[in-house]
Length: 269
Picture 1 (spheres, rainbow, N blue to C red):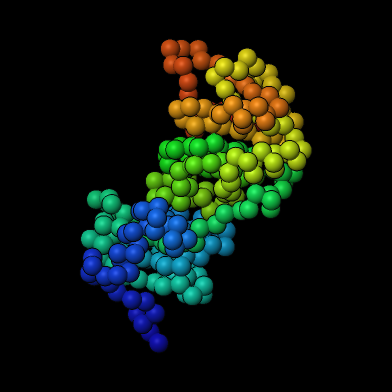
Picture 2: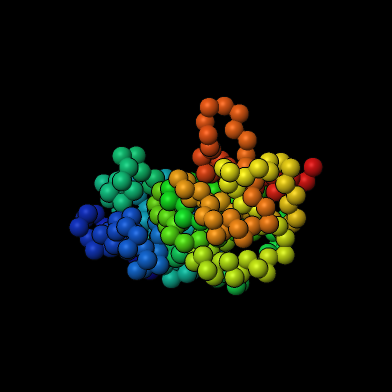
């Protein structure tokens, strides 16, 4: 069998496979298939380094030879995935961009059950209640990865971490960070077993984030972009803190605030 015989070539925008990949922009389709879309060779390289081969690899006709692309093809084949060569027009339709990446991957979603998490495995964890913005969530996942956090726990009705926008914002960290989904009741029950500090953020708190004592492992609990942390979850925290506002703005972007809290909790100084 020649190398050419090991993959398919698709040129039609109405092809059923291409339609199914394009549909991954919709949460309903992602929930139904358990799949998500990652764009670019860098993203795919991050996945491969962590043992996550794509179930489908789409390569543009104009993609230049690259050792990482060869590796991606080889590992996709080894995992039983499909390799498909597509036109530039198809890449544009799938990515919804005029200047799309030349390599796309369809991957399996991965969620860690709440009761499988080991708090002692990392100095800090992040829990988010009803986060709604995919860019915020993706940036928080990337920040959690950079700071060495154990994972990100999504509480209640949160935006999908595997949406195309959220995945883009992670810059590949979606493959490195443990992601958990749970409801408030299950989280509150599980929180009772947490061995370190549970720290919430509230605009009405009186304790500064710099003066709060955070015993590791710390669990940083952040609320919704508009409403903040609900009373029930705030009451479950050992301490609620605020980040001082020194200018006219009365609050910070959620991803920025989470980054400040995470690095305050992991500061070794």
